[in-house]
Length: 319
Image (cartoon, rainbow, N blue to C red):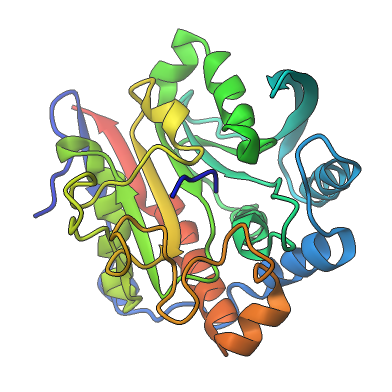
């Protein structure tokens, strides 16, 4: 994460429908969801380590993600880019995996950054999200969906949202128009609570659908309660990879674990016990599992269940 210190559903040109069968609504979350995500986190943090933008370790992480995508039925490409940071020319790349649907040209983008800061190992921020997306992509491999899913792993987020900004800047008007929404994941392990955010008013429909799914699944997903007037209820700040897409007018949702009820009530202090974990030496699996027993795997299970079902329950039809 790059960060400094009543439900409304879309109406008008399109109708959004969440559909649950009676038996489906009562189903419990899948018990072992998140196990594969955990294995990916171990590989990214223990075998590779910190993944600073432009470093050899970021490249190793990129190759790891590309390899894992090659084992899933998606079309994969690398999108390299250059940027300037503090007067220095640097380079990174996005990894894009596309699950094609023959039924439509519409798409949903699911994204997370794979780089980290040099401090700690970046387990929470943001190997956690990479793991959840890779597991979700695998879970959906054989599912037929009414839209393409574009899984994007962004480089150099910690250097100023470089990867997501580059991708969004290079989207054609046609691609923007065909994008139903963008779902961003960032820092899923450490926080006391699990959250989903979205836009204001009608632009919050993906957030609201996620909350409905979680309620039916008895998963304690919530949203920003709006205790800080700078961040109205249900919304969040512009410090992660959703922001460049939201700036294009694309509907966003953003999954995160933190605590909006402590400190400045801006979501930065993730935990009552230790405050913020991201960008500290504490961002590693050993610390998280010692200080918060059971939380890591519980959050992975919850977020994997939510994301997988969210991507199968969205239905958007022209009136």
